[in-house]
Length: 415
Image (cartoon, rainbow, N blue to C red; front, top):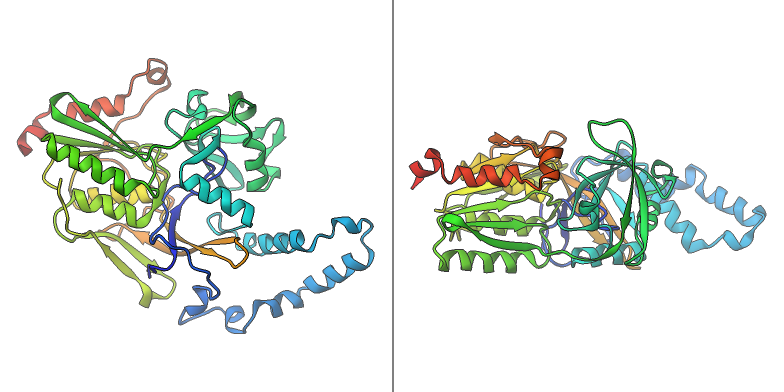
């Protein structure tokens, strides 16, 4: 179940301008020093887990023997850094699970991860994930160097400055992409629906991620963009709600495009302002079914009566999909755009005693109508694509479709 002592993750593996695990994330605000695995609490544990310390199993596969052989005979003893090799062994253990969302992060990597969540970014401004062994773009951040250079959701990063990305670990790729503002990196990219790679040179910069932006449109319609569900989102969204109420808005366009996700509880906070009463926001299903949980909205619902359009695209993932899926299931508003990313798993972030982090999949999540969106995404009520010609013409056909909705008969019938 969701624990107040731990962060709950709903995310793609993402590299935000260099690294971040964004795209649908957490629950509580404090990270615990965790010693007991969630898996070990299951009523039906695997035999290996049931047998006791996993170190016994590792020993039987020769890890200690290998270490002893290296200590005794490896030519360059200066390379036998015990701390570095220990982290390498842990990374290999976790990687062998073959779950791209279950990851071990060293203390250094953990610090970068936490900095990214706070919006302190340097690099190109793109959220990436490892999918089928490939480095894939979930979404470029709005206004980022990556977006300006033409990086798109679904792009495969084939090479980084000439080096093949598939031959690197995630963090090796991250370190190669990131760098000081003003420096550049050349990515060899394969765009979706094309086979020929393209070289794109991107100048790195400092990037500040605004969690929530608000724009008042004609007709007293408010365009509210949530770019990430991070530490600042709740406060910024509640401020937007206050403005919407004070200025007597007649409708809301909630823009979740390119939002890779964030804190689970923050996504529920946002949804709570959009719907009336305490309704099901998301269903969390664990390995141990006795821990399954139905998460409800708070009942606040201050803008629940305003007509709502939600914009989504293939860069909308996890926490964004929780909001979009609930809006669709509860028939609260209209979804416009293209099919979302499709990440329906839940991760827990455990801080270890040395500052390292273990991020592991602990559950799957489902929409209020018990739909799984994992690997399939959410199909909008109205499909509207943005073509290459639209991009060149700087035409936002999806936002235009949302504006048109508020001029339509369907909207007028709601008033």
